[in-house]
Image (cartoon, rainbow, N blue to C red):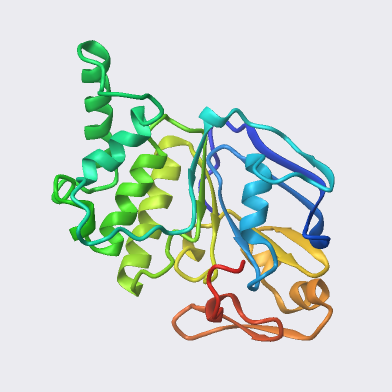
Length: 270
């Protein structure tokens, strides 16, 4: 297991929570906690409500029952499901990051000390995510992996305690998935920042995870990956036989119904 944190704080505390949308219960009986410095994945098949759990924690959708410990919005950095940038868009990568610093203000950036501080923070963030070589290029000209690094920088702009990422590896090729996963883990450790990440394939992030929250028809199971991603636990969670295998290259393969996290077909339904 990864190193023990010097200081920890409970940032998310979900108790007996349920969400109902359109008269249908999306999930229920969810219990989970997230501490500062932890890297936590929300897993499960499509349509089980992974994104809805993030939104419930953010207060964007109401709970039908149970409770979620609230966090001030300034303590949370949130990256929703991947946005695509038109190739003709001329706004630069640094401008996208700058929106995270002062994008809530109307008008031109303020001159003087405040503007210099904002510019310094943008430069710091660009360096943090390793985007210095391309941050001044138009965002529409960048690759998916480069864009995602800059969007992560934007989400980090106000020194959040919790970073919530909804399918940040979606639509990236395998090398970029691995690189962005490693980047998120490095930031999590260096900044003592908690990360909650929705993923449809656990494998790129598996080496970095402290815990997982696995959603299913029977509610949710939370714990270490080794404790949760097992044949008995997932079979009980879904009420059907499921086999968890480890391939020769270390990748996890889930056999049976529901669909395995690494083989979802509708990436935006979860």
